[in-house]
Image (cartoon, rainbow, N blue to C red):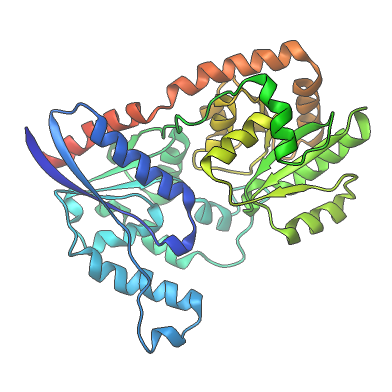
Length: 373
């Protein structure tokens, strides 16, 4: 069996981009398990922040940029594989230093560019994304590009001038750890997370602006005013400052339960303890949380922006991210109408079958072989 070396070029741990770490880890392990006619020896290369007397005196953000844009390229060129795979589009500038003719880049989204251009409603970028644009400008040097959704491919063609023929759409998988737990465990999990008794638990995710948290707070406020049972908002990833600011702005009745830094096991337990995922993002590159929730038997109410309809299909209720009333009615439906709730849960189980790491590995395997030709 022919053997080839693949280098997955990762990012800095200090950037805390956990989704990129998941992508690299799951792609690597899935490729090793996939029964290809080629043996792929995969190495995940992650850089360390440069150190030195002068660098140590710099502001942390400046030091990270120096490491990322000066020292990393000079290290990367010593780690060329038979295939080079840059797993994060913000590192596409590495194509100027490694062998681009045998290189692949995975593009998850181009949100900074879209935000700056005013294309994403409700999202604005106060500063011109110069470094991101310079990185994206190097994409044309890649032998092949992976887009994680058809929507991301469309954005690359329309706003970055990338040839559609160079782009392959390969969906991410979802972690097999996400599963439905026995119903009798729900009460135990409620106590574990200190959720109030007899409350409807609604989960929101992330801290980024494009997650559209103000809309989520407004929707929850309407639910708390209308429903007889209490509605508890649980926010995974939000900061104390964000919680206080948004709670005060919408005059939220009940305090928010804020969670952070959960292990994978705890995240699975959290999904299994909530009654609905509210995901009204202004934009996404892919959107793992709706799929993770579906795998855990949780109905999803989300926006119809970006690739989200493509990912959730008919297995979630989708609304315009500005449609407070529509999102309110949707959550009310899945919380109190049992037949509708069960229908969306069943549709969710069917939908997630499209997103496996085995399928992803199969398509990446084919792409790598084309790059070698």
